[in-house]
Image (cartoon, rainbow, N blue to C red; front, side, top):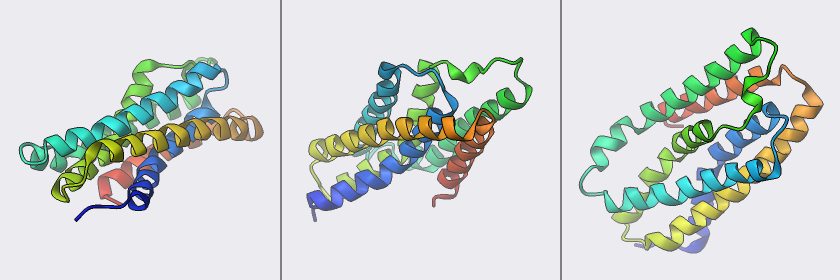
Length: 184
């Protein structure tokens, strides 16, 4: 059985929702992002969303059970740590908005945390004997677009809602982590 392109697109949209939410959060907490940094969010989220289904596809028979059992815990821990750090910096920072600066380390961790579900989708594609390359490309492009749009929308919300919105951003990341952990 093979999925049609509409099904793959809908899967891509579903997978991109976590990346969109996180990008939205980063958009309203990072006030001084340059255009290229906004595009980095899309690039990182899109790239990881592209790679993870491929990894899942090719590892379906060997390590899928091992990784699948820990994937939600890993995603939860990464998002919990980043979310708690955002809240801590907002409440107890030394007057500087530390997270206002773009961090490749942070965007990489966020991209990994939000793309773990895509690994499981790759396993599903392997079981269905679906071609992986086109499906992964669609998933990556959709995640890129959703992430860039999320950062831009988040920036507008951040301007409108003010500085303490960073606390809400941290809470949102933690809630996304809980969602991943509980498998919603």
